[in-house]
Image 1 (cartoon, rainbow, N blue to C red):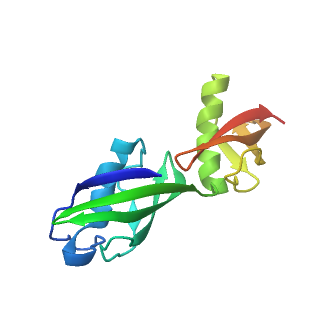
Image 2: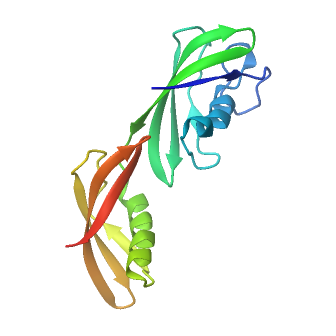
Length: 164
């Protein structure tokens, strides 16, 4: 679990996720994630509404490198406009469409060749050892690869590509 402590600005913005007193929880957490080593894709963080009392918990989602990640932030302290959070991330399955895009990019880099597309058979479960197959297309040629999860870090999946 990671701790984030900071000052929340009062006065929410329309369409944002204000907590008690108009505090924008999403904006605060988004600004603080990088300080604890979590790199969210810009503008991807979305959180539920929460009343900011000690022990309150807010559920959020974001993407990191296009991969979906869950986040839970628990309020640990409230002093004036300062609010402390403990943050934990939860890996989510990577949908086949998102996986295909990242696999095509990674395969192109590994092979040193342009990959036109990658179509994956299914989502990639967030468990070490889980795998799915993808078909790479480059011009008229196709190549099958197996994508295998090798680790989960900060809610993001690490994986290898191997010829099928």
